Length: 297
Image (cartoon, rainbow, N blue to C red):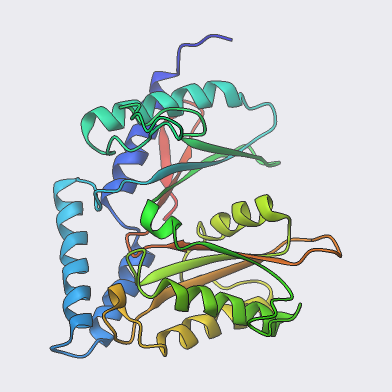
């Protein structure tokens, strides 16, 4: 295989990284502004949401990282049959190295055994690349930058869960999701957004929970049971008075997205991925020349 990356693709992915790191998508900014308006004047929660909004505006204006933890770099690539995944991987890694040298990404990837920083955000498993073949002709690239603080607040439950009296049903699922919110207590840079997967094995559950975070916050789950549960989790969480950064208030969650996978009869996992308010998620459609033809968020 030719190890020379497609420079047009590198430049497009570099721009995707820049925008994702510095500019929150419209659906995220909307719910954050609504949360700011909802908090009571003179409270720590109101002040926290004000600072968050100011941070968002400054990062976008200066094209700088919205958070010092520029996070795990997760690419989801939706491609037609015959697509060369190896060539894309080369371009993605080169774009990540270029973005790091330009300051769009912090030097944020270390060897898990030695602690040595690669200095360029490239190493085993980083960036994280997930390829999905579809029948269409389009090439879509969706990028998420997921900080370590919010990743630490993720959780996985195996039902039944005796301590929570959570059985293998939707009521039990609801109990463990809310337990994850309570245990987070505003850590992970709340208010947060949850991606949840019901079912699957331990590995696929966590992968699917992150895929759920690629949905827009204002979309509607096609499964009416899950759609109702998503709304209920947000309402119930915001009644817990944990609030932004755990300061108290009316905004603990900004959104919740839930998917479902088949499982073995012996297992019933509920996997919860927690995303911070700095919900860095963006996507593009690339044309045949590897140029950006459309932004997805």
